[in-house]
Length: 285
Image (cartoon, rainbow, N blue to C red; front, side, top):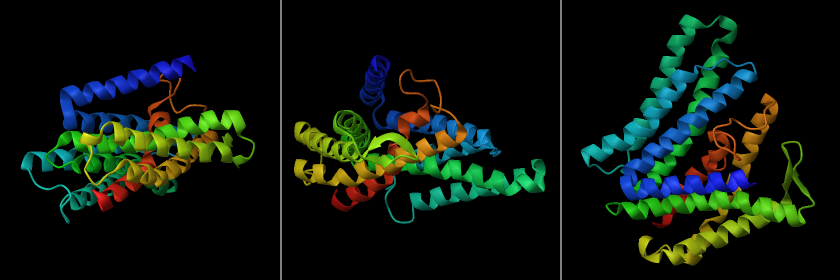
């Protein structure tokens, strides 16, 4: 537990330092690095399950998916949220990934493994970097005021990560009814409900404390209510990784972060929360 707390404090320190010194560009690069590391760990687990994804190709294309749309729009000074702009670029990159994988499987895989290689590689790309890219889209919601977009992204992170923390604390105290015993025996319904309540309250408090950094219409009450959906899906996101780890026979996705595990363990709850958070914010901001 001590290692987990120290690692958490160090990671938050890294995020704060990145925001202060590198602002939005640095946050995007940090997200891309975390997504790439998590994607690589996912491919390693797939290999343990007998699949044969193109790990380096998938991770490389995932980095392109995270960085190219953002920096292209950044340097061209165009609106990244305009209809038909960035969405088209993302689709093109995913299409390029499929084409590249098809070319490689035709050359390097036997007939029995070609489809599973293609599916495994593309799944890793779509499930992690594509989903995590919604954090980049959230950063743009602040417009010219970079700090607003960053704080909106932090709001989603708080909703997801503190739901996990709240669920752990509440579940350890009063948890009795198993949420999904076949997936994650330690999770309980009491913990899940408590985690959502904790996340909602902290998101409301975050906006109340840093009121000047958030859009006027994004009130603390609205922030607390809107935090509920991403907090709920973060539980599902965490369960998905638990299933993958159980199938692969590993306790943690990696050993790079003391007390936490790997990069996939770090971002697992954020993967599904990011698109849900973006959709909600896009409706109100």
